[in-house]
Amino acid sequence: MSNAMIEARDLSKSYGQVDALKDVSFEVSRGEVLGFLGPNGAGKTTTMKILTCFIAPTGGTASVNGADVFDDPMGVRRSIGYLPESTPLYTEMLVLEYLEFVAKMRGYTGTEARKRIKKAVEQTTLGDVIAKEIRQLSKGFRQRVGLAQALVHDPPVLILDEPMSGLDPNQAAEIRELIKEIGRERTVILSTHNLAEVQVTCDRVLIISKGQLVADDTPEELRERSGKASYRVTVAEDEKGDDKRIRDLLGKVKGVDRVRARTADAKGELIFAVSPSSSTDLRRELFQAAVDGGFVLLGLEKKAEGLDAVFRDLTTGEAGEAKKLEKKKKATAEDKKAEARAKKKARDEAKKKGEEDEEPEEEEELESQEEAVADSDSGSDADSDDEGSDDDDDDDDDDDDDDEGEEKK
Image (cartoon, rainbow, N blue to C red; front, side, top):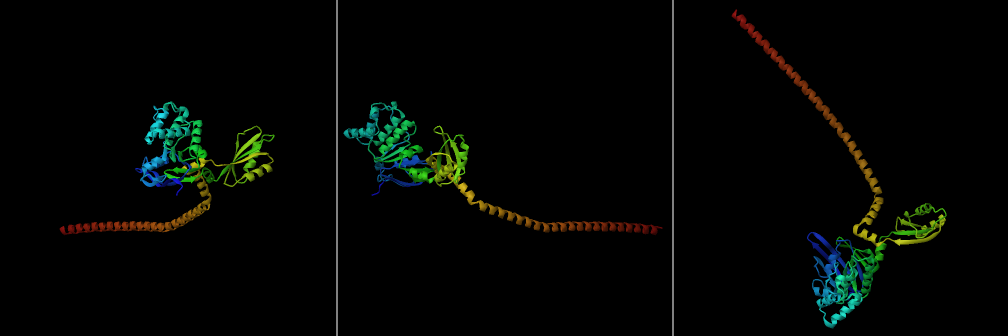
């Protein structure tokens, strides 16, 4: 028998030309608290609505506790407690009245309804406000009432969409602890874009971006995927209070990219944040630099890159693109040189060819000029001949006139 309480296979959802989900597949096991992360508009709420049978997928399918969203939607609804982002409350009702209404909607009345309401109230610690109107409650207690309505029918699966939205830090911490407590007995999907919630609440993380799953790991594994860590170096301040010498010594350690001074926690201490240029562990080298430099090392702490940096990398590609560009620059240096050489060679060949092409053109131009001159000379000779012919004709006319005169005499 499969241990999966939720199974999604190639889920897709389109709204006209917009693809809200693209072939999303995942499983959630019994007793697991899953963080469903993603930026706004990534497809989190669409997935939640498909799993709770509010909307149907365009493609693929899903099942909850063995019930298929197409074949047995009522079975899915019975297995799920759902808290949407906007808590569905009738604020004019008392808390008890509202929970009785929800129990009746779920098909429970009488003793069975009272027993289930009592258990939900105990799980969400609503006993002190059970007789108050919902509109009189704080945002934190309203979220608790929303959780209670999702627990009345004692479902094996809880789906919570942004349950800490709009809560102050104290209220959020209370709801977070409540979710962890509830998650010991149930499968929980926590949809959020708050990374702090995920790190302290969830066993596993799914990250969705632009309708596609881009990560499926534990929070620790996701941080390790980033590779690079940072180091916090604490040293004793020397008599001169010269932190520049220490910063320079740390900066000369092989593998160190940047050293920045930080505000000290106590008097007589200097704190430096050391950023590595690669994923190599530099603690041994930093310790040796302290020994060689003659300064007292009070603390050396390695810190993994935060989940927020990994989230940005996976959902926007900023960090990843920077790494790719750096790698590409190194990898293509020789290619660029070869390309430059090839371009130079091509230019030289083109120049040489151009010079060769110019010579026949010059010869043709000279020939054309000579032909033009020749034509001009021919034209001049012809004109001269014509003029000479005209003169001869005039002479002939004069001779005829002379002959006519002699005959008259």
